[in-house]
Amino acid sequence: MNGLARKRWAMAGLVFGPMLWPMFCMKIRFKVIQRFGWTCLILKA
Image (cartoon, rainbow, N blue to C red; front, side, top):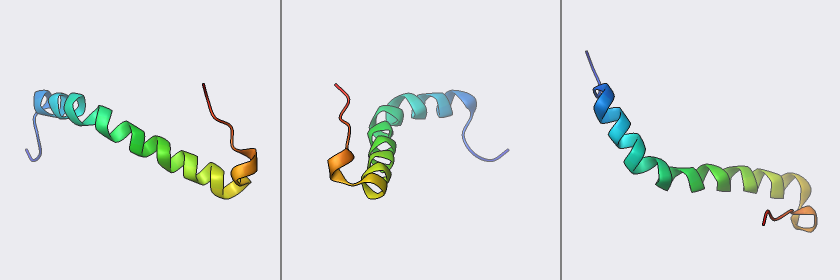
């Protein structure tokens, strides 16, 4: 069996998940900016 065990994957997710989530959010935000431009940008409160 290759790769990490379930417990190690879970720990890696708990450690690195919060750091990776903003990167995914920024990717979506850049797509919205490219599609609609800065004037239609909606900021969530």
